[in-house]
Image 1 (cartoon, rainbow, N blue to C red):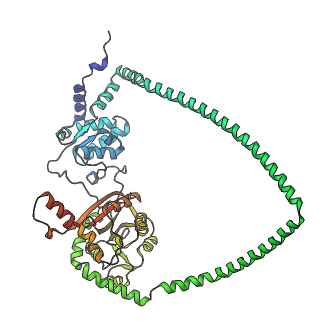
Image 2: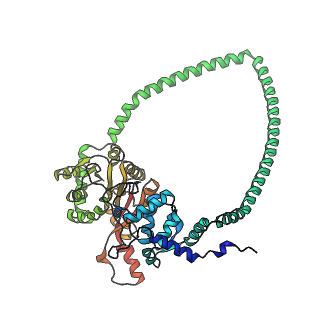
Image 3: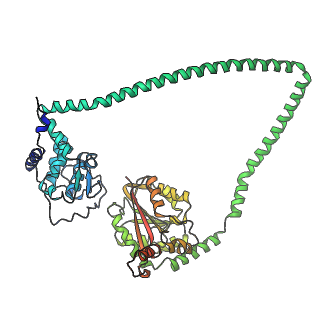
Length: 494
């Protein structure tokens, strides 16, 4: 009896051979002094997977999620140099070294090794084996075994034969499904044929009814000349009335622009009243917003998101919507970054210009509409969305995505209604606030309108008021009453 050759393949020997082959390739080294818990942040916004030769690989950030367990399919879905970079990060928790990266890339592109074999070489390298306890990878061993089996002379045909036999039941199911489909189509054709015969019969009956109606109409038409004369007279009267209506409509259309102007003037407040309201709101901000330096210290946290996006340059400045007193623009200037603001409050815009800030007095949505596409590095909006109706919020998010350059970032900060005191009290101190905007809602809107890598950042807890207790009840009370008073949502343009 001929024994199955597959049973003679020793997986351990195959793995050992893979390791020996790995020893002949450039060493994949691990540095004990390197911090693997943080990822590199690029200060330039470039296509990190462009196939340029011998670039600085330490700046490549992974596009695969960093976690403790993977299935090999999560890595195999990537291609070319992005695949190699993600394999290094997932299995070795670091960026690839230049020699290993270009060696694997050459093997991959030349066909000397497949992606499964590259993963195997990285996984079973000395450095990869050191990570096996902390990083689990499923689905690799049997794929390596199968790839190796296909390369063994003679066994290749046997494996392909078994694979063909294994597909026979699926082919039979497809044939049966095709047969059932053909029978259903045949039954449908018969039903359609019956329906067509029914429609033909109905059509013949309708023709008979129309002929009967036509005969009745001819009898009625020939019965009385007087009736036709009356109809002619009524038609003349109707035409005369239509002409009069048309004349009145034309006169109304001529007067409509003037009426609209008068109505707009009647409903619009005077410029003096608008100026009074703007001045009043500026004073209101000074009292309730907080000290200027306090606000600047709070907003400095966002610089770490602006720099990696390549924003704040002369070519790709930061645009701050509803800039108010200009604290954020001041932070950008002190950080050596280029920013400009827009606010519809003339009083605040003038105060910002007196401080030497680049601010324009305009409606935020109209201002974005005047900017060219892909010309802005970052769009920010601090406590502006809660002042707007939903259509304006959607328009602001959509226009922000349009004007951002690829890899540009949008940041919107707003009150956190999950904090009970914020949602029920402090939010309503500002009479110009319209609606609270929960964090999940804003994240959904930004993702739906096209932003990627949308994340939330919870800010400004009232720590001084928290109950000093570690019980579950105290922790829940502290979270809902003294937890983060604001949150920010950040999204990137692909």
